[in-house]
Length: 427
Image 1: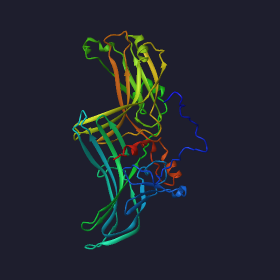
Image 2 (image 1 turned 45 degrees about the vertical axis):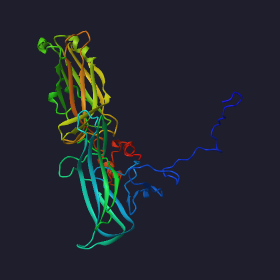
Image 3 (image 1 turned 90 degrees about the vertical axis):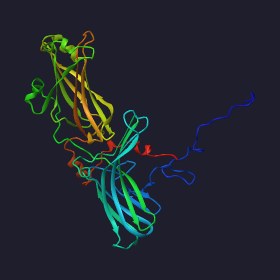
């Protein structure tokens, strides 16, 4: 820039020069990058909102309740209802069918440290209904509208395991996805093109505890939990570092530590889990109180993926919450009672489930009690308690079905809002 030249001037955007408007529909000069068919949602009214998917010859209109999700979402045993429309007559047709499919896909890249690169697929769901079938030995021309309805089953095909929700997780070198699709197949005779349209859908089933929750650990159960069926008592075992010989310690002089929690071990996501801890150290009375300050309780979410035909497992852990620890009573010499409260993650966002030998989402309560710094060669107390988390609280099913006229509400907290973005690729 020359010395006598002035820099360019800048001005704020005014009403005369407004910012460009953005919409979900692309203009003629814009290009949409999307892996699947175009999705259009009509806006003539709340009751008329539909998901519309199109191909050259077919159009599928799904009309589930509009939950605010990007894809059609269905709850436990939800009905996938819609209408198949032929945009133009299709000749030489042998069969027209609609299928509800669920596939578990596990892929390992060449950078994976525990698996051989490759892609494994497991069929979880295959449900098919025939909308049209030509008489034997002949074909027909098909046009017009064809309504259909398919229901998600409670269990995986030919099994007793509950059908898992839509799921996506990425681990170092390994990715796992459970995806559900509605697929339309138009089978034509000879070398004519097989018409096909695949529509992605979300299956987000809710779950609930089978018994009412225990709001707090009774005081009598803290003292003697074995006599109360509502709670269970677990003893913590000492562990020594590798360089320390455990036989050098007098076991009878070590403190006795027990954890008490509700015996159901099933809690709703977002609820408060009550627990209590008892530390007994009659040989060293001051040790009980010192250890109470070093108690660390947390809730951990563990995502597992089995690889190499179940021979290896990839694990990803995520800390959901830490417990608040309160010293309830230390009046008795050599004994300390602690009351603890642990939040079961965010409300509606956690759920424990598994597909044996393939993938699992587990939740564990982890308790670690570290020794005081001035004590050398003293053991560490550890304990892990597997628990089950559900999406919704106990006793909410009937009221929800009544409010929704029998339509199961999906567990929208299980949905990953970035799932559809990861599926988009630019060519």
